Image (cartoon, rainbow, N blue to C red):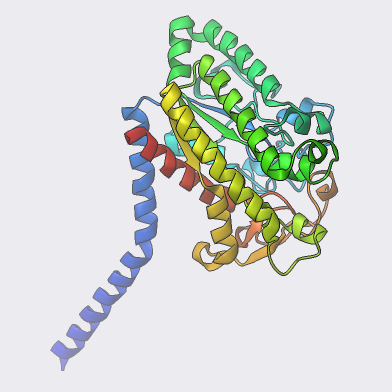
Length: 367
């Protein structure tokens, strides 16, 4: 009887250990993934992360601009370090912050225009991105923010400061081995083409897509001329699934497929052009399918332990973003939400996007 009891206890103990091991397996594999990423970064001598784009990657450059497109007030930054708003349009960190951490640099990518930026911050990269910007310069001009041309001008200033800090040879090496990130396009459609009258009078939506792709191509060529050899381009997300768009179109029950079809078409054109640029300039270029990642999260939230996909965490979650989100109450647990406000993802969603970006980058580096 005693042997039987001991056997049962031992069997139960083994079963519990197996259950515990299975529960820990995702965490262990994720940690291994980070280790592998850092090994790749060391092997290919990734030196810095240099970011260009819109609010998806702007850590606070717009704070000093004369524009209404800012997020440097509560409840933005609620879950950031020390719970402080920085200008990031989310409750916490952005995808680029998580990418930098995965590579092993820093837990946050600073804004180049941050008045508290230290010289040593330049060594591992900064962001020149400006919320509400786009591939079309008109998009940025509508909100009085930085178009890509101005972001590249600030990058040239960055190069001057970096040379003073480490010397010309080391500075050029840092830039040559850096990962450049380009993330924009959403505002070209939402803030420009579907809202203003100028571009629709000039272009059909297909023609406008071609215009944006040509603008992107020009920007990448300029980056290459300034030293870029490694680039991550983030596609446009499913804008038809954004709570604000669904509210405006009176279609809160499901995503606005007409808008999403435009994005799918645009992203396809972007990928085709990137393949051409990659061959012509001999650059390492990775494309991040943010559309697929967000669409999957919206359609199958339980895969990511999410629950709320139809509204944001700020205010009613249906229309508020930027200034209209200022000072409003928020949901209790944003880790269950896809969207933080009616447009922008939560920190958790940005982490999921970052994981996809790191995977794409790793594949490109090893090809």
